[in-house]
Length: 177
Image (cartoon, rainbow, N blue to C red; front, side, top):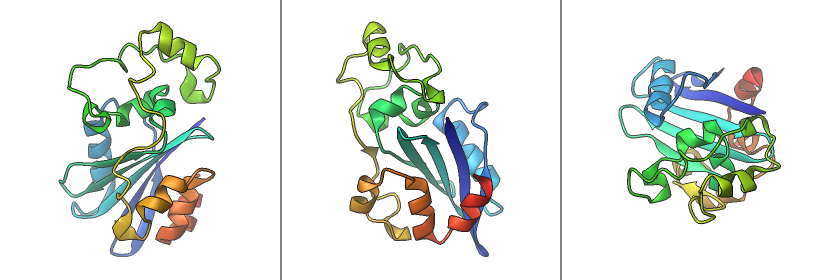
């Protein structure tokens, strides 16, 4: 099961809204959704995506700047259609056009059923090196908000709750959970 929410920093503090990602196909779509959720184009918007007990991702959108991304476990996220949105070629250090992720047969693992996912990935032609195990992306994504790279990399259980607590946004996040 996955959870996705938008957390926007406004003049009045943090505002949270849950979001469905069913119509989001690319990182650009996700960034546009984040920008639209904010009342002010200069607001910082964090997109939280979490697959229960497997991985979490954060996308930070600051105005019109390119989105910044952090994914706690790229290999686990690669088995999810929602994680696939975040795992861009640039984030994985690949040349555009490498389609290891495109050849992965997504079989509902976004709902948490990943028993045979490693076998599925191998049979689909994805090598074990195609997507690294562990975190990828900008671990300094929340430095200026009070969460260091080191802290972010050590989070596991209820990572999004811990992050929201550090931001002073735990209550607003809980309202959309």
